[in-house]
Amino acid sequence: MKVLRLLFVVVAVSFITTICIRLIPGDPSQLTCAGADKAKCDVVRKDMGLDRPVVAQFGTWAKDFATGDLGKYYRRPEIVSDRVKAGLPVSLSLILYTQVVGLLIAIPLGVMTAYR
Image (cartoon, one colour):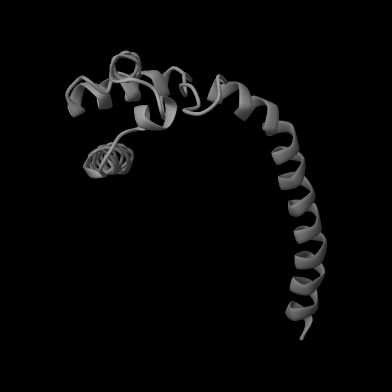
């Protein structure tokens, strides 16, 4: 039951975030086609799926996210999942080193506190 509640909360927060982002004036296509004519901006909007209803956009995003497709950067011709994969080894090594240092400090402090 807790897993279903967690899933519901994640979906609800994601959907509310999507709606809040859509309420902001402008849209991501304006970042991509800054200074271009309206026809090019319309093509970019259609390519990004911004011409569709919010519910359809959210459904596409959720499906893509579930399959590991994080989309493209707005300003660079790069795929987000490739950038995440490139930064993952460094992040994981930092996590590992932090955990080791934390345990090396926490265990002796815990033992000293227990003896007092």
